[in-house]
Image (cartoon, rainbow, N blue to C red; front, side):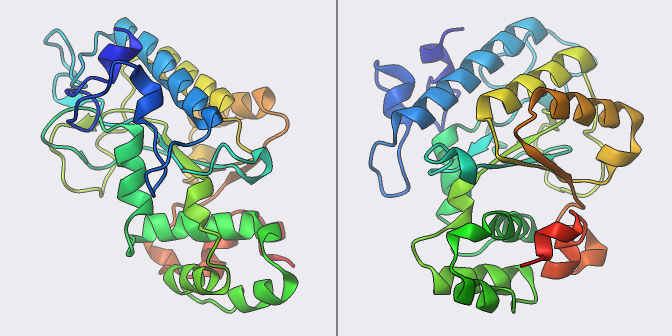
Length: 283
């Protein structure tokens, strides 16, 4: 499969892609063509995933070509890359979760970059996961705000409250534009609706999937990398994965936090941020 096939109507967003390929697919939230750098990142990700699909025998709709014991799974989505992620290397925040949790496109087909962005950036209301990522990004990129603005933002108690305060104080800064998000386990049960549980934490080929994630991080080149589960500290295989990614990305600050949807946090901003490390809540 080439880039044009990967960007076919069956694969990306259910709409026809011009013959010029990936470059014409990439748009900002207001419809303007985005900088070439984000185009380059996305094409690199597509090329990386294309090789992975061939090795595992995955079709354009994300399902396996041949019947196997994994036939109940499919590959549902490319990573989220925020509309301003590529603009400044010092403002890149990458979140890596465990499994995807829900089949976000049960009609079939792999969700493309533009649609993925719209699902996050164009919504006025978010779930605790997205609000949590936004809050973490606000604190990690605190130099985007002046000191007096920062004092006001810190008064926020919940994820939503903190996010909305920052939005009100500095309307030209949307933290979600600066994030990227991917997952450790790339597959989801077909038409799965419930995000709870760990049923899709399965490796079809551990070596291939870990290698894919390592290369994905290298392409995205984050300034900050957040692994969204304490399992990345507890599980011996995940520990090795994190250790290897740290070695390969020495200029990246790596955190392991609780998932922002973790129930005991109750969407409390400071309780969530304390699961990173003390330095993130100072200042």
